[in-house]
Amino acid sequence: MDIAVENFAQALVAGLLVGAVYGLMCVGLGLIFGVMRVVNFAQGDFMMLGMYFSLYTVGGLGVLTILGPEAAPVAGALLAGPVLFAGGWLLHRLLLGRVTGTRAGGSGQDAQLILTLGIALILENGGLIAFGSTPQVVHRPLSWAAWQLPLISDHLGTVFVNKARRVACLVSVLVGGALYWFISRVRLGKALRAAADNPEAATYMGIDVDRAHGIAFGVGTGVTAIAGGLVATYYPFQPYVGFDFVIIMYAGVVLGGMGSILGAFWGGMTIGLVQQLSTLVLPLQLQNAAIFVVFLLVVQLRPQGLFGRNVERA
Image 1 (cartoon, rainbow, N blue to C red):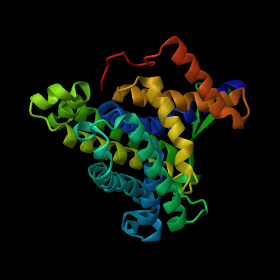
Image 2: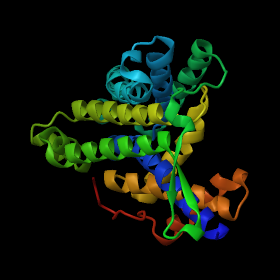
Image 3: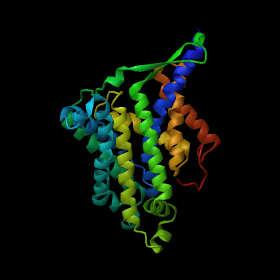
């Protein structure tokens, strides 16, 4: 058995599975930044809310137990999307809309940064009061099960594929593909792109830019919440877990290309691959260090991102 080949294949598969979920997280943040030009510090905390929503709908309240232990966690993650969409839309209407879009006046970036940071702190500390600090996980049988896939020949060994991560990967690809189709083909999605490209021209064409921003913020929040619900099936979480992932989200969005939905997904995939493959040569504690080494190299060599152009949109 070739241990080196087996370890590389295992890390590659793990990177692809994790990277797809990272890509979905990055798509949510990329949509918000691409349309609204808002640096949202609270994005990781919206993901945390998606995790707890899935936890309580599946386990705590037992709402989805009728679907069975396999399908219920996926349904809980998907249901977190529309619920957090409504919350994000309402939050934009009441607070963020006053410092972004046509109602912003001269507020500028400073007010946006302070507001989103304040929202993040409120959500984190509110979550600590409401949910406690004990790490949680959405229990499902697939989390402890894996497929054994043989490599090209028997002497090269086998690769173990965690079933929960495989399901999360497939759902992430489907949701990401649906969002890309919505942005590219649906009239409302095209309106969001127009509001992102040139808000003033979009206004002259009859597009309500503030409404477009509210929808973009809600969709971006909901997509990240779905990713959070999927991660919750195999990753322990607590109210401060958002900070661990928001750094990955921003790195993925910049790597993929600012303002590009497709690029954000591939940026997240790149992060997942770098994170897992780095464990072949680095200690586990230096996974994130490897991410930022690659991040800095890409920013130096290709500032517009790996998969984007300076003016590219979704």
